Image 1 (tube, rainbow, N blue to C red):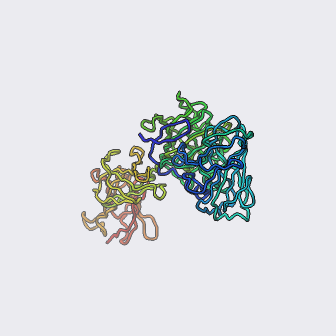
Image 2: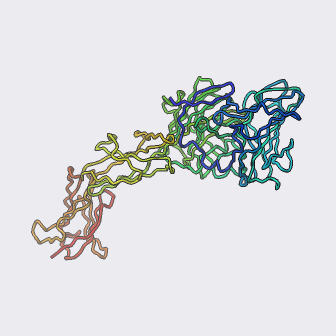
Length: 581
């Protein structure tokens, strides 16, 4: 079983280590800059407690669940002081000129002690000059932490930045400081931690990129696995969506961990429409402990079907599960697993989608009324080939299909062939093209074809999309329409008195032929009622003849005539025939 690890101060739980290849919200990186990942103390670092300075206790603390498990840690010394501050200078210069406005963000951990913390201030600067509360050489911001602060756990600092002052060189941010305030000065404590300082652009909510308004989200890398964490409430009108990724038919899976029973939403957003704001949400509701399928109708999430939610008796606190959604030909099927994907439920839901869908995928997590922490990892999307076409030719079958795979998502396609339905054996060929010519066929034999995709689930691991979900098409190669006795003469003896047309007819449909003069005047209408049509079941063909007579039974004048043959309602071919006298 795949395993992965989140390290929390008091919590250890297991996920799977395989990194999903599609689990990056493409484009998000262009909307933020990491100032300091807090994974070393090699730069000039000082811990300040009011007027006193203590440089001996700054270190990198591995007791963390984020960024590979590192953060900057220090202790609050000086029991008479109400503040503690860490300053980091001399870090590599970071160009933030494109992030003109936005928010300063980081994670912090404050241990509990006799009095609560009540305020925090943060500064970033292009030099190492700081004054408490900020000055004109820094970009400074503060946020109250007050009674709502959760001690002994990680909290999220996010507050808007003003535009860069002229005195700040936004192309060379190289220093930061964070200061915490307590209402009383007599407290000392250990293991204050800071991690992952970044600036996020205020314009990052456009075009489907990571939406900072939809709860308090962070993206980080834990042991090589991309993790998405939501800590807060959410806006159901603004789900997190993969940027510019649209899939008509696909399989999407994700592993989820719900930390709080407050989590009303913790699921996959699928088939979000670009015409309106609707989307489907396959979701675990921790408040009711049920897996449910919802549809957002532009104002509310309502039940998408009348099927009752699939409930579980498992505790909703620290509950780990996996979700799988299969979207195929407009039918949405939803499954869940509580053992890391080793076994899946029978379909919790399977129904025909309605309205305009686009196949965009994302997350919704949190609660409309209370904070809730949810983790997503191993998001994998497997595009399914669709619209497979088999075109019959003389001694060949041409196979074509469509795929919504993006660059780097699909390594190749497997094309299967059999002579009976749903029976294929090994793949006929593996190709990177969406077109294939099968020339190892025999005319008159019906062949069945299907296509699967070889999809990356990590940078080096391939998996094949399920054969059972692949569409099947069939066809029989044939020589087209063959004409015997062209030219022909009605008075030329039995062997040459009729023009004979052999046409491919796989299932013995009605065959008809129209004969015209070159000027478009109809001469004869031939069908099974007034001419000889013979079906050859072995060759899957029919033979139709013209004896040179018009609809009145008279032999027409010699010359060139135009013919058109239909098999059923389909025009099988047209051409010319010469009647000689």
